[in-house]
Length: 357
Ligand code: PHE
Image 1: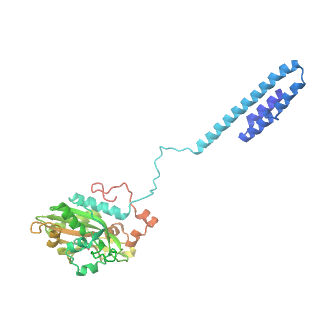
Image 2: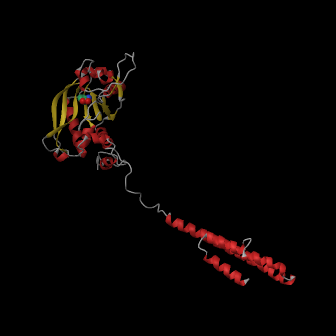
């Protein structure tokens, strides 16, 4: 019996895993195990011998069983320890610096523009991208026959057959928001409206959907000089420089009189776009003094109020500021491009902290 005990306790101590332990259990205390075989021998013994051997065998069986249970618990503990060691995680480490998502340069530039004009006292207005042709054209002094309708390569929405109402359009510019803002807020008024606009056009500097920011300031004593100052201040703040060269060109828009387009000096050398140098000019905005008919269409008396308006190409500004040579890349959704040109989403542009950092 001492041999049996030494043999099995030894094996149990050395068992490497639960299946080895189970094999030992069967061989020792299973129904056909060695202890059971010894129990059977009790029948052949004298009653005196049996009284000694019986309890001793039972004690051996108990001892082996509890050694098995203890070893099983120890193996489970060791397995848990090993797992905890491999699944260990230090929650106090800083999170991974790699950015998963980022702000598109157009969103970034939109935020930057909004921050600059907020400083100048302009609030943000919005309007629908699908609009009536009254807001997009008529109210802006572009009547039905006007060539500007064709020039803008307008997308018209489909109307059901037999429906004679004029079609809705995808707005070709943000100017319809001028009318909506005047209707809603009256004068005096100082708003900008950033947003998407649509024209059927496609090349390196034109895409069928692009972005503008409209500006409108109405009051009793506003002149072209105010317009020029505001635009110069804006461009300097936006490009974060003391001087950029602007060119004001006399132009024509049905909704402003007089009108001026503004170009910015730039160069396109070796496929890189740079501002403030070179012999090229990139048109970035249209502007002028709001036409009296437009002010009247907005429900305001043009004898009392005048003002200026402008429409800036946001995508153009983004290309110039961040040296992006092809406008079409903005809308390709190429992840590598987005990772390269994207902005950290938590860095909110503000004039005091630096617009773009
Ligand atoms: N709406 C004009 C355009 O899309 C820009 C503009 C806005 C011009 C306001 C003058 C005044 O080209």
